[in-house]
Length: 506
Image (cartoon, rainbow, N blue to C red; front, side, top):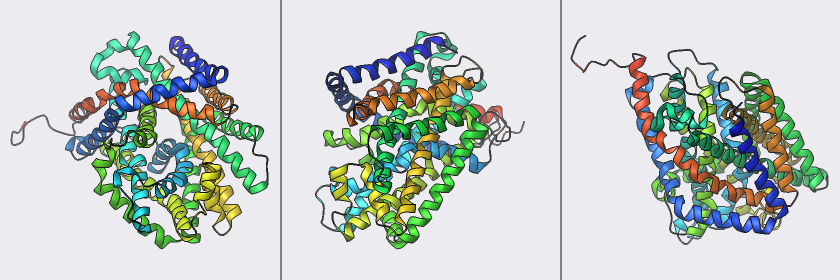
């Protein structure tokens, strides 16, 4: 174990939690100022970086070099369904249910400024709301999390580099980064970013599930219930990550996918499949037509900071440790497979899932104005999922299944990121079982402490996510230029392409 990285990471997390507890107002003010500064001066860079990463990934997938296999010409360690399930469930996290329900209806009620004044047509408003949601959860988010960084990590590891965030600087610094203080700082910064990005969903989960249990079964919606929910999730994550990638993590991911598919089918049948398919086509059309403009939109700084920049910073903070996780489970997959099953197909599936859940909420709001927006205004974002479920047949079963799915999504992210954090704290070899479980418990404890002071603790953490993404954005930058070079090298080393020019026989 790298004690410097481990102690520094835990120290920064402890200071943040203690400062938020002891000096809540001062800490919140300082973090909000940092948030505003980061969003204003670095936000457009993040937007451009995510867009460039996606375009580079697609271009790379179309080249003959993309036939090269990650980690060499070996068979994949996991079957395709297990592999894709682990990737999707890790990346979606709490957004798989919480934001899937809440964001589309938020944009429907208040039209995004990029699209100007609303026309008054409910269909147009629904398409715009879904299209804007797809901007945040679509191609760009998935590309930064699972494509170029994983390629660089895999190639560098084959050259003797460790599975740690500092390896993303290998294209710039070479093997010097192993002993450099810059490497230590890179590791700590990336760990803090992903801890902040994971503790937030754990805290939100406690609030959301506690609210849902209160609505469904009359359980008191208080800190005690929230604490029990977080304890259950933390226990699941700790047990899963302790059993390893091939057991707990992939088993949880598969269960997650099957439950999500079952719920998707149930909502389509019990709601309106025709409305959902029509809305998906319309929303995806708006997304594609305004792809570049919405991705780089900066005119309304206040709106962009609260939505686009926040989400992009959140995903960017995950990128280095997701590169570790994806590289670990993708050995034997071709570069083309990696890009297709991270940056192309999963975003489309995600957008459809958001349409099934969020689009159903918009449909109910159109049929009965105030039925969804009213609870959203009075009880906040956690109320949206329960309100949608209550308006479907078999509402009790559906709502309970959504609560279970939310716990599963966040637990899968927590166990995967606990593994990656522990790997980042390990000098060589695989991280110990105790270290993996310890990080899962640490994040659960941090979430429990932060929600003890109310929504303010989690809100402060959300703003802190954006601040931590500032240095991470520069750590991930070399992957944009190095990945194409490394893919060509892998293709030549594996004999995918002949070194001889065309027409010249050996």
